[in-house]
Image (cartoon, rainbow, N blue to C red):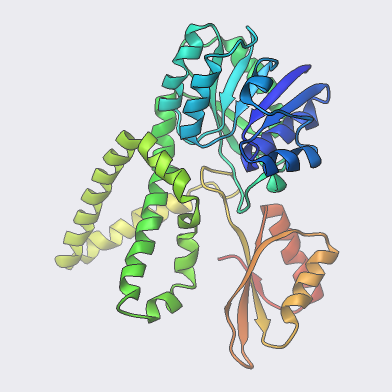
Length: 367
């Protein structure tokens, strides 16, 4: 497709969408703007954008597609600013934020002026951030939710999908309200729970120093999402307040129920509680990308001798397998420890497993 694409906010998501569009639409020209000048300059140097803009006005008024890749609060402000500009009549405006109802309502001013706004939420991410981490294939096989308001022309939705087809994502079209309910259940609320677990451990740490030492294993893994941007999650929770308050009420009721079963020593009910959870959890898709970024970890049993970590990473480097994180769970003299290596994708993890098995006698497994 020919045309000008203007990306506002050149972080991981905005940069990755820009790269996916460039990969598919070679005749398109990508303009970019970011309040952080270093992001703007790096995006130009990395070929994510073709032209850097000094203002939102500069890029918006010549754009056929505007992609807003900023936190949700800033997105609302940008939508207001766009409403004061002389945009192209047939421009499509979209965003990539995690909440949709309030953003969609804010875009009503643009709709009244005849412009098309279609909310968007690519449900994929990475451990890393910024334009340096952007990848054209970041959204491949992930769900990309589009949330047009009722009455949006189907041909405009199809046009946006055509612009975004290079993401190789699975597009789903739902209402802004349903989007916020779904993401509240499977993304927003779990982040609250993860943060709550960390707060509970921290409170006990004040009394018991052993807590923080013992929390280095599975507890660290199940609370990883609590390390996400505090500012971003503050904004998301305030934007999706009604849904999350309802979920909290349901959660508290559920916790009170299981609390009572423990007090009553009702073993059958407790067993059923865990069996039901296990059945639902075991039925979740394994290979699909969801709302929370997956962690592709490989656990390697390694002997305790100098250079063993550099030995393993050397094998992976020879195969050009990229590592996102590496840590040691436990090592004791003359015993095997556990090396945890994180990768960007399931394919990289499987390739690494095959490489290590071929080069060593170390055991590998997924947790």
